[in-house]
Image (cartoon, rainbow, N blue to C red; front, side, top):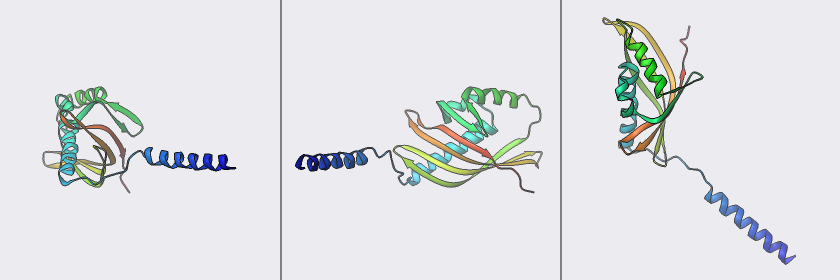
Length: 161
């Protein structure tokens, strides 16, 4: 009986100590400076990459192994470069302007996870020729060159009506 009691105490001690040490991570508050870094990273990526189609700036915003899950498709940096090249070949293409409305931003370890609405407007000669909106999330991680986007998820929001 004493052996069973000692075993139970040891087992329960081990169980509870494992629970404490296997905690994956919890979110932390993002500082004002980190929030500014993350928002600048997202805005810059959309302005320079998705609006400006400047493939030479991908390394300023994405990690080498970056992926975006875009409406059921996986896009990596190479696929994005192909998309940019096609867009640059379009004569008189509309200019895309992006505005983000942040829902949440949290820090996990050193990584920053954010979710936001992305609203885009396409204009030509001072006229709006199109709009679009997406619900997105992104993971920014620290690198030797500064924070870069490692993962994104984007879901297109259909127009109502």
